Length: 484
Image (tube, rainbow, N blue to C red; front, top):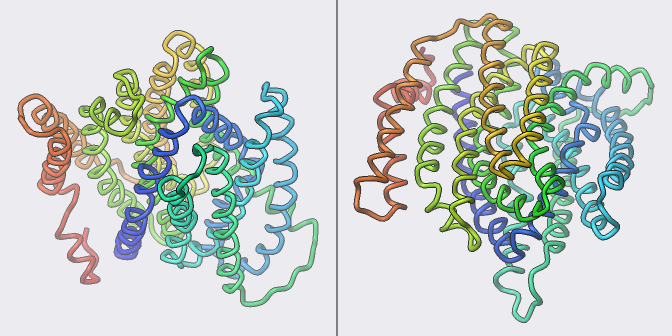
């Protein structure tokens, strides 16, 4: 199972490295620079507003389906048509809810064109994710990986043309960006549907209300978990934009800092895509093998996460000035605080996936509820006083609190041994990374870009020396041998 994880993870990282970083920094960042912080701030606030309630649209079905189909292939033909029916009903409810909530929140008629487009896009995303969950649950990891980049790849060509090659065009409009997203998400949805439909052994739809009701009843704990994670992750921008007089600008500055976190964070999300079906299968067989794969993946993700987060923190001012025309030291401090949450979020990805595979949702949701209460309370206190910087501090505190709590719960509930040696190596590694980057920024008389890159490579060398990245295990896995 380790070998399968490593091969598919490598493929996932390669295809995503080829597309998503270029999209984030070559398209999304350029769009913000073209339209300005205020207009982009409104865009990101409206997007996050629709994302906050995406749970109505999904209701945990993706995670529920991934776990159950990976363990019981024969359920696919039974679930597929019924879940599609559920998704249509949920999409209608979601649409009405967002439009009503938007009116109550204070968004005006001028906002509703973008808001409606975001709603439609979120529906496309939700259904596509469900279709992809069937593919990953059946073991078609590479197909799922390729589908994960289709919309971004198309956006690079379409929006890239509008940004750089459309001669005589008027000033770029944020609406064009959203229209392009609608088109590319529609194409991705059609491809996902065709691929998933072809995996059915037969198609026979008999509507029985008992089946959709059973699925919803079993998926609601997943829905609650996703909702709680979403709401304490994405409320920040909405609260910034709504609570402050200069909310649009502050939301734009926060979004600029969050973009770098989002770019790196996609690699943590890749782990969950692979780990959930694999851990779901292993838990049925062996706790020892489950613990082995969990810590194997944890060491890999920490070996990559810690050097990037610490390096970006030390070079935060230079990075933001390089990326954004409107950047100030305030923007750099914002990004510096946010990028440190990358470490906590990567830890959370591993252990929350283990808890989900183990169906430990009741206990997990209690922790997530406390996380939401903590995040919301801190935002109410800190945003009026420190603006977007206060929201960044709130995010940092809450993400680390959640990471520690979920890690402890995973060890207790799944009953895997706490590997003190691994944690000691990780703490030592973090101290080494801090020392390396302090040296790079204070004493090396070279361009900051080379200092940043050199710091990451030097840190990775220590990850190898500490055996967080163990090449002997990797070589044995490539030779199809199991190594511990």
